[in-house]
Image (cartoon, rainbow, N blue to C red):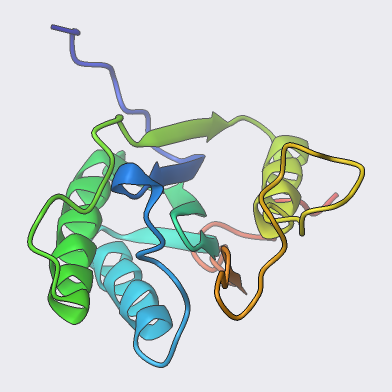
Length: 166
């Protein structure tokens, strides 16, 4: 068993997690997109984290948050549980929603790292190409393939300027 790690205050993190079996449970739609945004907003408000961006691909998400009080582990527990219950009810699933892998929280040290990860997250799902044979087949009506949606948020309201300002 791992020892508890210290959770420093006033840090920026990129959070990521994948759905179980890489299922496309986070596909955008009339209800799917608002469910994710609402659950994340409720969790961020509850634990006082500022949201920089949300990037949701059909089977995983990357989100940027600023943690004022070292509460991001509580946010992860609450958000992931809330979202799993909401989406499972919406999709009529009753099994595990998230992969058994631990969710990731990458500490972003400076403005350049924050900007790099924001760009990476918001451009994550590149369409498949002929030059990259390892990518899945292009989407079609029978195989809609992964989809994505992004939200860039003005989350720097409590601690000054934008995280990537010079």
